[in-house]
Image 1 (cartoon, one colour):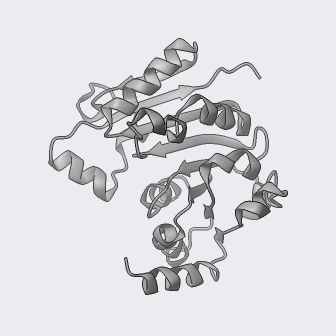
Image 2: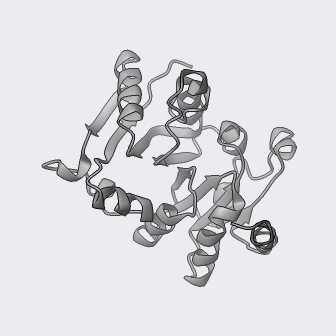
Image 3: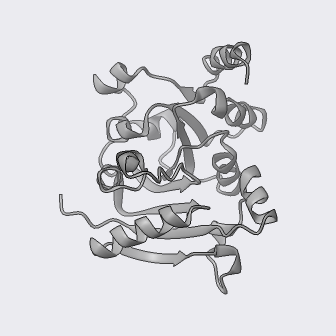
Amino acid sequence: MGSKNKLKRFRENETFKNVIQPTRQEVLDGFPVKGKWNSFFNNQNPIILELGCGKGEYTIALAKNNPNINFIGIDIKGARFWRGAKSAIEDQLENVAFLRTQIELIDHCFDENEVSEIWITFPDPQIKYKRTKHRLVNADFLKKYQYILNENGIIHLKTDSEFLHGYLLGMLHEGNHQVIYAHHDIYNSSSPPIEAISIQTFYENQYLENNKPITYIKFKTNYIV
């Protein structure tokens, strides 16, 4: 994407009522929407996040399928989720928002118990050991997720990375967390959860066309805090 297109999309994002783009310092100094997301949506419906939402395909599809739930796509690359934000406005989806921030700041953006579910869809697996701290399902991130999730909060990881699938399963079993469902090839499972297969992104369809297995884990964290 050219720099001119990026700048154009950044400017257009600023006009969208469903986009919030705080600076890192603004988040750290006291993000004003933290703890007040239901007021932002003007309802008391559950809140579900998609982390690393990219173009927002999954966020938009989930919102269309669940009009009584609020969905927030989070990504640091605003020029990417511009497409999802624009589609939400065009389709008059009032239960969608996009937040441009680093995911490491998630506990500064949402209050304790404010979120019902988290979707992590096809994140960078960060395979190299020195990149462990950037994996969105490492122990530090899971503790942040547990903080913002309510007591029944669920996390979903859907990925084409067998490495990341195995890494998370190992952590969950070692930490005695609750694995609700896990499969290394969700589309060849005998009874997959419908929420895991009902939505396919552009790249997911490409993986499936190339017979690449899609893995899925649905779980609850159990850290003592």
